[in-house]
Image 1 (tube, helix red, strand yellow):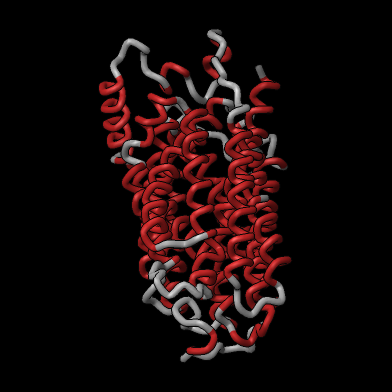
Image 2: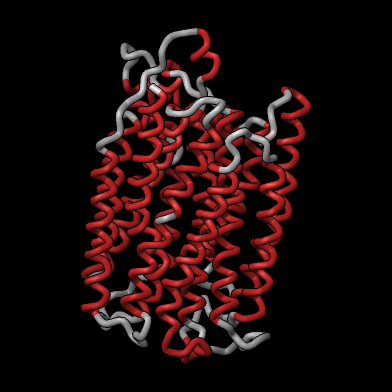
Length: 444
């Protein structure tokens, strides 16, 4: 049983790594690609597409636990993976109508995918392995930041303008990679807990809580999961954690869609600017992987406090925001390099830009691994609704952030993230303190 769970965690991580090698690379470059299109009939916006994705994502999280409960975590992830592949391949021949339709579809698929992932990961974990498994999955997932962006860097490192052929080649390769990841998810094996008192007490997720009695009708099942999520959302701990989750959504928007666009629009980087977008994604991925290793794989004995990890995330994020504020032009998210109105405070340096990328990734992993960990501990028997709420709140904040990225200059975007970083950290610390005093939860 134990070996099967470990294999499932690794297969889950590799499958997601391949799917998100395609999707995160796509999100990182899509606004830059759209600016380079020679097709004058195309009127889409990468920021608008990502705002639609996360907007639909947020709404779909209200019913995602119900879908997962009926279909099952494994097949929910497989079907969602196919939708991800369809979105990526649409960029090989972009058309406005297909661009926005696939944005809507992937928003729904993302809600189902991540709810199923959270349930499946906890189903394959117990109190002794949740930190290890979370870190393992997170590190494998963040390898997706390396390979796709490395490919983009090698393809575009000396490219001033992206041709139709170069665009089509990149997105066809990415769509094949996404399909390979979906295929790996088919290899996952379902786990059924042994009915013994020791396993029952140690398990983080009871089958009876994840799936309702087979005799219950599908509609009753859906409504039960939906109301369970609403009740959970109103609890004090979840409301406090929602502030931290909002911040994670804002950072997700910035590093996955805005920062790469800013680098590509900074003319001081010269002809290497487009290639730097790929390198930036690689350094973000290195930071994510390092964070996943430190707070997951190396914390097997659960001796590292969650609050310490969050504090580290705050420090590195605030440093990254300050460096970006100094070297990136204020209107870089809105304008290309030829129509700039703002000048950076310091001379833009590729080295500093890549250091900032690394810090963004490291800080993001600090927040996300600890949010996964605390949700897994506090809501071990309500994992489906808990992770749906996590993605619901995160995707709402990401959708809002992508929406204002079309209009707000860089300093305002950095100020918004800094504000939520402060309040999100206070909220997380409050939950940790209350739970330690009330139930004596062991620190991670």
